[in-house]
Image: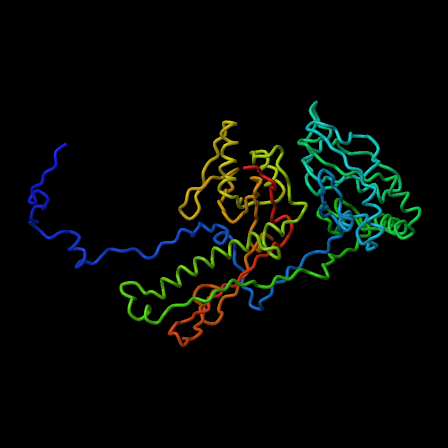
Length: 467
């Protein structure tokens, strides 16, 4: 390797034209508006029909239903030991309304913890019901007799579900109407009916409560499958028989939804607004990006808010679990069959990918559908819309939502109020708050919204989906 010592050798040749670096100082750049990675498709905001709530509150009137309890039981664990929270026993319909904590603690203390492996039979069809089963953890399949040799799948029980509780108020011990078989490793707490009766023998309050529940069950009006009192009708008769009298009773305490709000204060220095607003208005661009963030938060709240979010407002009878873990075509079929006219399915993009893998493994290739010029995957003709606001747990599970929308369909609706002061977009306003002594302009940006489920079967959820 040789090195030249000639000074002239290191001098670059003279330029024959203007260098591009120098030319850029005199040229105008072609620029884009500020870009934002946090903008998603926001399909939920697009598909919801928005109802004008002029009074700020939306009331959902329904027929009176007679079901009580019917919730889910919660547990606490210490190491391998699992215990039911005593107050949670009131989620059992027969124990609903008991307020004596000492009595509930006594009943909870009689629960026996049992462990089952995949394939173990927990209860057999036709055997006497001798205990109430509380599922603390795991997945259990209900199997019943079918028209042919194989057993029919009647549903799945999972964390927080319970069964056998009907025997508490029954005059005679019944039999199991189905077989319970563990799908995964399961932890079950069993509350023997004999122990409950023994407690009732020494606790008059419990004995009286169970007697009242049994009497109410015998005198309760006939109900339809939704828990509403049947409307008495006569059909197919001839002659002049006496027709039944009836009426449709309304819920005396209907639910009311108040509009929620997402707000922020946008601040822009007057020097920026005055001197740097060409060719793009700095205030408008700041406002545009702020509104995009507010709309993202609005969709997040519509999914996750504990008061009105869809994940927390689905009826427990409209929540189902997957048969095995990943979302399969069979799982989505069961989900959409639980309501009339399912219009949309919403899932996290990773959940949609997991469903695609299950379809590919079965040699199934669902057709696409088009909404607003966008090609989307569908199942049974129902669009499967991506929504990254549906959470994915640390254990790698998520949920799939099935919706029927619109007031005319007794479905899910969005709530907002248009015509508010200083409105910038529907139900979103921008209000000037003044200029402080540091020459900073402030704008209050507010978005008002909520969501309502008009009838329980308008919304269903496939829970604990492994992705």
